[in-house]
Length: 524
Image (cartoon, rainbow, N blue to C red; front, side, top):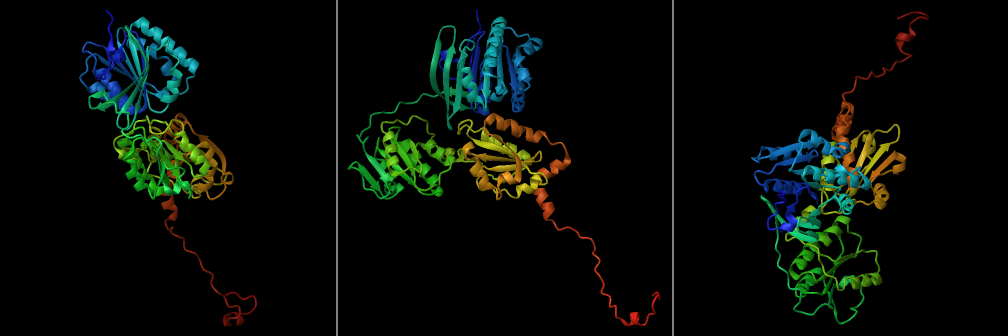
């Protein structure tokens, strides 16, 4: 009789939770902490006689392996896999030498960056070869890949339905997670395109059962338009169904009485963003998904992070200040009939806290710089590949990196800079590649091409992570370590220096009486 295993998710259907013997399953998870919880739950949910082998990879897996190893889990073997391509491609050979598994559950816990340098063709061969090996050894393998790079990995795996028995993704949504099953195969069934909502606690993940809202509004107000007066730029209401309000607060009060109307808010300055985000969130949570919420930027004040915040709070559309009134009215028509289907967390403070850039700016030591960029790249609230750019700038000959730093002025939170390898490393959060030249012109007081002789730019998450990791590994000399500490350098250069005694000239009167009475050629 074949031995099957389980994912261990409580209340999840058996068709989506069973791991078939000799099967190859893969779960992509956005956050490392969610992957660790999922992996731990799978191991703890097995029977006492189940033999489990856990293979951990990455610098953040050591503590996780130690925690599991110290728990009283029978038949658990732990291994550590180096984070490189060669170790991954020889995984089955290493398992044969170290374990020679038979009828085991194998769990691979690794960052998605492990597959960074593997092409889609090579990945397909690796999946096929691993599937053949699993069938020969009658072992089941489930891969938990996490952190930056899961989107690229998921796109490459979507075509591997011949080698993989199951492919799923776990996406964090601030107060719960969305579990998307591309396909899942067991002995008795095949399920595809399934979506379940999961909630986590100390014991792991469990499926949520949501009540379906009443989609039939009590009022037929789908054709009603409520707007802040300034969004029409002095133009009158276009019809009797258009109502103009004096400010956003009155608009919110009136909008609370509607179900499917269109509400248009005005945004004039950056200080209004937090208040407007709370108003939009309150409307969306209380009035449902049929309400159409539009925000028009009246003056240039929205950052990319502010725009993402308003959309995450429940806004259907953000209209830029550069769009004329005619185009704005066309955009209003485009949201008619829409239904807001994205999940909005219950607590708006979670969005206000997590969707803001890091509350640091300016120069940071290399290790602090690395940790800050790592934290921002690991964020799941921004799409992969658009969280910012990393720029390496090498000064022209004769200019030290610390000297060129004095020309740099960072005003935005989330923009940080450090000195390493004789270069300036500058990370600009929420900056796109097409905006880089404008940003550098604003940051440096002198033209960048005149101060720096070389520029290298990275915009992809995995590339940025690889570069910042190399910063702290390349501390080759104490001199460079001292230069890296710019704060210490500033204190050293600004401290008063003890000056040597200077000899002052003494005035000599050539017509003095002692010189006049002295005979020619007479010495003193």
